[in-house]
Amino acid sequence: MATVKITQTGSPIRRKQDQRATLIGLGLNKMHRTSELEDSPEVRGMIRKVQHMVSVEG
Image (cartoon, rainbow, N blue to C red):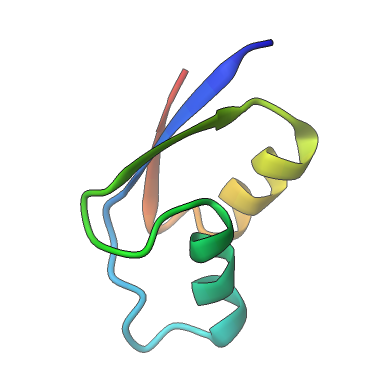
């Protein structure tokens, strides 16, 4: 199955708790960390929720 590469580019400081939890769910917790996950509707929804703090490849 296809994968998507996600890199955290924004800080979770002064963000809502659910956005912080979404970053952790994506496997990100520090700046410039990268996570590679399967491309699924669930992952795409999580990316959309924190799109202002991540960059996506693939």
